[in-house]
Length: 253
Image 1 (cartoon, one colour):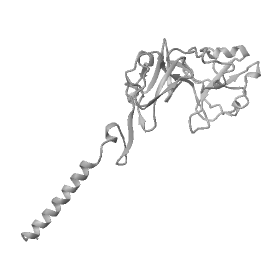
Image 2 (cartoon, rainbow, N blue to C red; image 1 turned 180 degrees about the horizontal axis):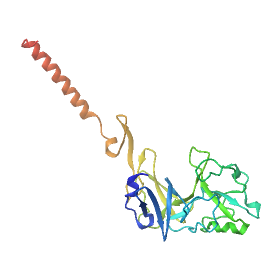
Image 3 (cartoon, helix red, strand yellow; image 1 turned 90 degrees about the vertical axis):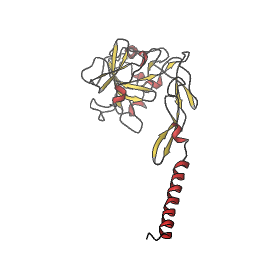
Image 4 (tube, rainbow, N blue to C red; image 1 turned 180 degrees about the vertical axis):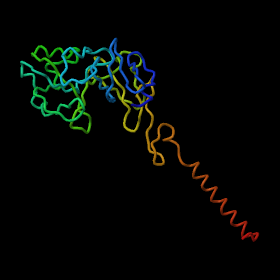
């Protein structure tokens, strides 16, 4: 894990603490959630207060439903256990491979439900996973499919945003406003192609990104020219010619 992440000073809403400077935990209220993976629009976290991985978790084991800064992402895919109402299960979703606790490819879930379907689960209402008890389900497993992978990564993805009516909800130049899908009235700022940064006007903004002399460069470096370097090379060349002429003139060779 990147050491700078563990040493970062974040606001209370996005407060991260580290254990032995290696395991970052997201602190929400009185609960701490180990961060398993970072996304540009959220974080993948583990179940709280767990010391070992379970194939299926109790529907009440993940008590967080959402707040003004985080919400349960619609990117999560659920494997539901022992549901009495099979109408909840989505056939297309059952093509997804449910990962084992060690991260390797497991089996296809007998009942699969993507939160993007939101027919039984609604992010706008801040539904928790306990809503599936209405269908007689006794447990669940959660994972997301990472870009470029067929096998998902276990955990619960939380989408992040800042309140749209807050003073910090202002995007910098060269950034676009992104409306959150799981955080009510929440927004994010995203730098346009060719720029990098957090995108916020009161944050790091967006810096120009480029390749300079074969290396990544940012900000003012991208706008500088090699005029000074060429001038130095020309002067060095003239100096070499003058030394040669003087040497020949005075018979130094």
